[in-house]
Length: 78
Ligand SMILES: [Zn+2]
Image (cartoon, rainbow, N blue to C red):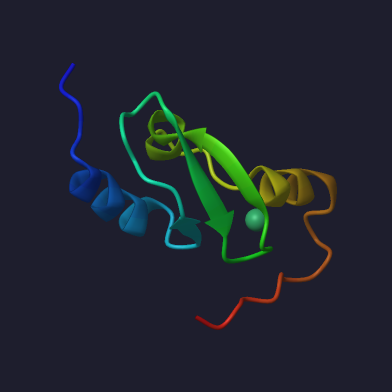
């Protein structure tokens, strides 16, 4: 499989995960990259591959699962 260039990756991220800020440098799809959730501020490291496959902020995912109906998270101003 061809590796994406960082630019392609970042463009995909903007489309798939506008709420996730990529802080680290994208090297390869399977190498971890540092991200931050603009929604809740959580920072974590994950592979570019799993982000592109649709996995988002783990903290928000947990929150969504545990208390789905408890209000809307406050969106941060950019
Ligand atoms: Zn989050």
